[in-house]
Length: 341
Image 1 (cartoon, rainbow, N blue to C red):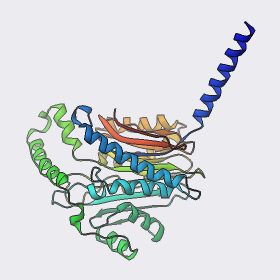
Image 2 (cartoon, rainbow, N blue to C red):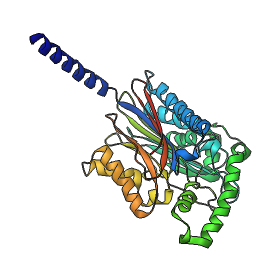
Image 3 (cartoon, helix red, strand yellow):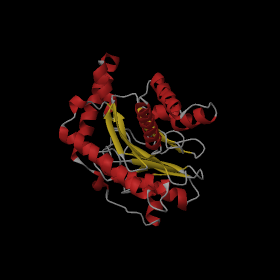
Image 4 (cartoon, rainbow, N blue to C red):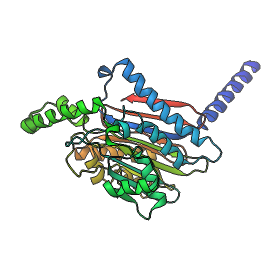
């Protein structure tokens, strides 16, 4: 009897130690590749594998930076986002959607949670890596945001890679524009008579963003977001991604956030900062704050999601759509990737 009791005690102790040890492996990065009507029934095995691999490559790129001796969260989020900008599956960089005029216009932002510095670009058409340009604005100019031709001129002066606009042309996105024009025309005629599924699909094709948030070995936070904007958007439209506090935000005292979805609602609700404010002034947990912000956007009539991380390595990835391309990596290198709700 004594032996059985001793064995049981040792077993419980070992299990408790294992649980504590497992909890010590905190998250160091989270990413997203856009939210929308992402349903298993509409996804082929090959497409699901391609998206999963794209997210994995981005997480690995960020993790490789974070595990390096001098790796910073700022370098990590830029590295992860640049991988997704090069992948035509995602609406950023190479995979940017088309405007109503048949152009690819991109926005991006990055923010350093340690210093509060931030940089962004909007409406750029010739910058291979918008997120790289956003960081250049942050570090090599006196400004936070630059737009259009001015942002491109600045990027050229910084020796960033300039490409012909044709670089961003992909057949899939071009076909998406043609379909979007048809759906926009139909929506204008039918207005609210469209059924719920049609309305969801109508909203879904319009939006897409990529983003990354990270915490490094020093406990410093950073966030980065990049997007091709809104399919069939009219001239001059800018979404939430390049707007600090709306689509992108980072503060070591609270949280780093990157958003994706219907930008107008994220701007109006100052979504990214709203999460931080709920934590700082309301005492909310990270999970509760992130969830409440997305619920608020839903109440306003918008949809989308966000990713958030704090200095303790806690991660939240709430969304109110059918799915969101998302993933996270722990400090031991364990990668987790999710697509559906």
